[in-house]
Image (cartoon, rainbow, N blue to C red; front, top):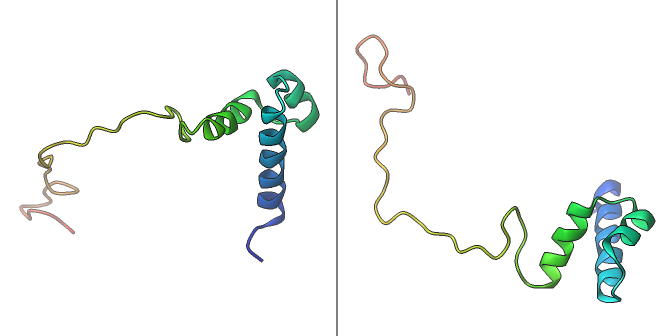
Length: 84
């Protein structure tokens, strides 16, 4: 079994949402039929629009140019530089 019952149900609902969005059905009507939040519907719409998925779809990630200097994980303990 690849999916649990809940995962399968959620995946099928998202495919239904995608189909409804493609057909031009409004968010509120989709929400009434599927009982899924407008946030989830919006995330499916972002995926369909190829904007990505997440809190800020389509954002460009900026990675630091030099590594961030960090100290020991838990600091010092009784004179030892680290307990790990």
